[in-house]
Structure formats: C-alpha cells, structure tokens
Image (cartoon, rainbow, N blue to C red; front, side, top):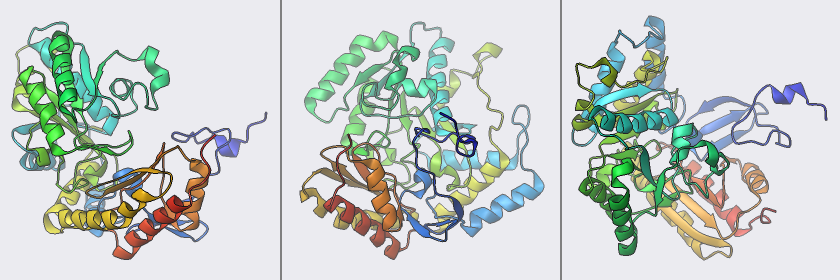
Length: 421
C-alpha cells in the first residue's frame, strides 16, 4: 500500500490513521462556535476537551496574552522567576481549600499527575521510608496518557490496557459507593499500606472513563479512609476544576482538603497549555532539607511559561468578575430538563448530569463514526466515545446554542445508529 504523504505528516490523537476520515479544518472560533474552512459554523458541545470555559476568544484573556507577548513570552524557571507565575501561584493558593499552598507548574494534565505521583513517592523516600512504590487508584478512572499516569488508569476498561506489561503494577479498588465497597477499600488499604505511596481519585466524576459520577459522600469516604491509613490523597481535578461540576473545585462539595491536587485544562481558559500540581504544607515540608537530593527532581522546560500564566491570571479574573458558577448551575438545570427524558428511550442505559456535564449512556456501544456524522449534520461538534455521548459546553454558552446541542443529542439518541461491529 502506498501512503498518501498529505494524510500522514500529522499523526492524530486516538485515531487509526489507515482508515480515518479526513479531519475538518477549523479556521476561526468565537463564543461557543467553531468556524470551518467550508464556511460552516458548529456549536461546540465539549469546549475543546473541556478547556474553553469562558468560550473562545474572550477579549480579556486575549489582551492579557498580547500584553505579555510584547514584554516577555518566555524565560526559563530554573533560577529565575517572574510576576505572572508568582501572582498565579498566590491566587491558586488563596482559592484552593485548606493549606494547598505550594504550586508546581508544568505544561499538561498528564505531567501534573506524573509530578503528583513523584511528589508522593519521593515524600516517603525523603522521610527515610522504603517500599512505598504503589498507588491505589479506582476502577473506571483515567488520569492521562504518559506512562505513570497510564498506570493509575483503569487497567481493564481503559484505552491503555495494551500497555500493561510496560507499566508499574498499581492497586485498584471500586469507588466506595456502598458500605460493602467502603469496607473492601478499607481492608485493601490496611493490607497494602506498607507498599502504598498515595491514593488518587477524580473528585465527583470520572471523566474520560465514561463521565461516571459519584456523590460527595463517596469522595469524603475516600478521603477519610486514606487519612485513617496515613496515606496522602491526590485529587485529580484536571477535568473537574474551574466550575465544571458547579463549584470552583469539586473537592469543595465534599468538604475535603486533598494532600496534592492536580489542575490543567480550564486553567488558562482554553488558550494554551499549562498545568499545576499543588501540595499541602506537610507534603512540601518533606522536601525542605539541607540535602540537595531531597529536592523535587522535576523541571519542565516551559515550566511556568509567562504567556500561559498571564492567560491563567486573566481567566481567574473572569471567575471573580463574571458569574461563571451561576452559569454552570443554569446549564445543569437545562441539561437535566433536556436529557433526563431520554432515560426512557429504548437503547439508553443511563443519563447523568452534574454541573455543566451531561451524558447519555447507551446499552451497547454504537457506531461512533455514524453517530458523529449525524451530529455534524445537525451543526454541532460533539465527540462521543465508548458507549456515551456527552456535553461539556463553555460556561458562557448562549442559551439558544445549548438548546441546539440538547436537541441534537435527543435526535440521535431517539434514532440511534447501528451498534459497532
């Protein structure tokens, strides 16, 4: 077979390149719309993988980035500092619960998780404790595509199961939704305590694992059991942070303070790559030493990029001055009203709504290509995966555009395509 170079220079994410349909060419964005080269405008139902919480091209963020670009687009963070990073770290510390005061910047969600795992493991090493080499994670979870992050994703149902032989062997439990599951988690933590460095969880919703939600009480149980066994809790808020679940951070709804918290995606309002791993004082103090080897051994080249920090500061300005959390609650009500009736549609297994997240789960995995095509025909950009079709729109979405998204989902669910073969 002769490869067509025009189709193979770019290697696309999660795509079988051999028979993939040509991607759509985007030429502009505005609000909750993506403009295509052929002139069509699509209503974006997933905010560019959950990042564009303020919609596209918000002038306040654009202006902050332009101003920073004119002064200093980048400078290394080893041995130097700059005002955008200093200000952003202080603001995050003020916003996050408890004493989550120590911010380590990186450039993607997966790397934020890698840093969190490294923090937890090295914390024990710095304390002189050996054998703490594993992490307890939860079935159905997803934490990223890099090797360490893959190891704490669901080992059976997730997209990374082919890499099992390459990954560290971790410990997995079910989320403690029932008393029996809580007792099982408690027993596993007790049995594995000497080998565990940390527990990692996605607060309130397992995003890429299928938009599986759990109530705050479940998250509180995880935090309580981790604490009772002396284990640090890592909260992966890469998806849930910045208003997606209806509160600024999902952990707030359970009243917990994790020991380490990961942020990315909406941190810059969907404008550029930036991530943060934030630790409590107890974790940070394990690295405070006269021994140079006790320092956290990580340092991304573009760590704390000034442009990205400027965008993130501008995004936080908008959370302070515009009603984002109220908008998330309004979206939640609209999604519930529009999607809940689909629960009784033949072929639908479940409907889930939490904050600005709405998901319809099919009884069987549909033909995703056909489903995407039918959604495009209705002028919406939605990316179903596995057995769900979901919406995570910008918090600023126009009500008419939100109605259009809900109507498109209702139409394709009511007449589902053939199941995948």
